[in-house]
Length: 115
Length: 114
Image (cartoon, rainbow over all chains, first blue to last red; front, side):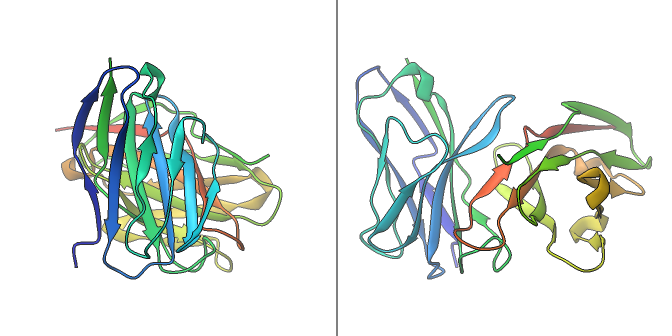
């Protein structure tokens, strides 16, 4: 099992460019989510999905889009990158809904810099 | 509103010394509580979790945490720190039902000196 795989590991964008951060899991997990990690702010939830075809907003969704067409994949799209989106992005998944039912499995992160 | 406070941004301890990392939470319902560890350049790994029952929970790598409802705290402890414990530690709170969304504290960076 590869677990949660994020690509790319590093990315530099210019303001206004668009890109997609990829996240794939091979554990048949229902739940997937995206967090961003900023210094002094911990991890904040961007978007999440409780199953294929179902997505919802987290704490900081502005500037990001997601879709969940398959159980395995949960890409995060930046439509028009801004310097404020410079961050480290983590994808996470779990086997079941509810924090008590299954621990989150995290990818190794994508470090994004927007100039 | 839910929140998690980790008051110590950075802690330095000597190898072999004991460790306590503080975590306070605010949550409207009975929470699930977690401690995660992040090594440089890596994702987060679950150390331990509290759901109910015994308020002292054991985790991996010799860590333990104690849930104190009256103090809204969930402090992480280790009796003897190893150099490999140097990392960033995050406390998190989640709901018992609904989506598996966690609210994280801002983290505590642990430095271990020989």
